[in-house]
Length: 311
Image 1 (cartoon, rainbow, N blue to C red):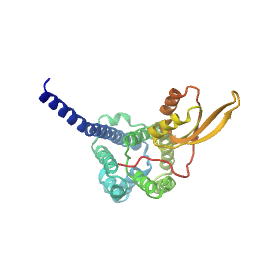
Image 2 (image 1 turned 135 degrees about the vertical axis):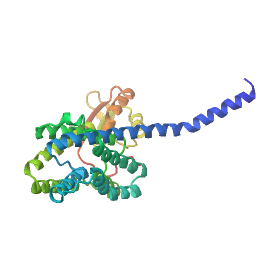
Image 3 (image 1 turned 120 degrees about the vertical axis):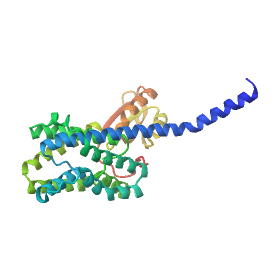
Image 4 (image 1 turned 90 degrees about the horizontal axis):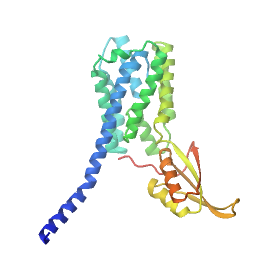
């Protein structure tokens, strides 16, 4: 190979390397969009089957949309599409999050809302009629599980299902406060209105639906949960670098003596996201096979804790 060919090969290699991050970013975005479309499809299917079959009122803007539609139908005999009401409710929170939280995060969440609304109105009825349960309790339980699965797919894509999630993220990011208590109160108001306007049974079964969603969601997605790691090791520096480099979380070291062998040990204290503890413990054991690791569930954190910024 002559000098000219070497130069061409080096130039091609540089071009390939330069575009590698772009290709990786494009693939990652495609994966996120695929998860969101899957989540939106599952949510629309759930609304058209279990939610409608049980006459349920889900939480958030989806439940508020269904309640508004039922009020318009029952009292005014007006039948607007589900998507129109859902889009109107999400418009203002989406604009606020787009300006103040993250553009790509908001656009992906808006994609979820758009696809869910469109499919809810246009999904073929042929196979939907096969899953119209006559038992509202079964509809509430299995509908809640499917609802949690659809929300989890969006969360895995670093987006949300829109609605009240926009409000919760905005309050959390800007004011550092937990907004779920306010959202829970809003859901309670929706259920009280449903009970007052229509029937108490509908509201009570809807509570079961929301409870099933909450329990299943905590099992499917753990990104919002934290775990405390207590690591007794003889290699604290290496393990600390692992935690810092892999999770961007910090740690605090305490010196002590292992009473059995009378050897000096270090206790590393660190709090990480719940979905990070599995690969961290495996990596820690590779660094120090003798490390003793105690993993505790963290209920609440006050102070600085690294959270990846919304893109």
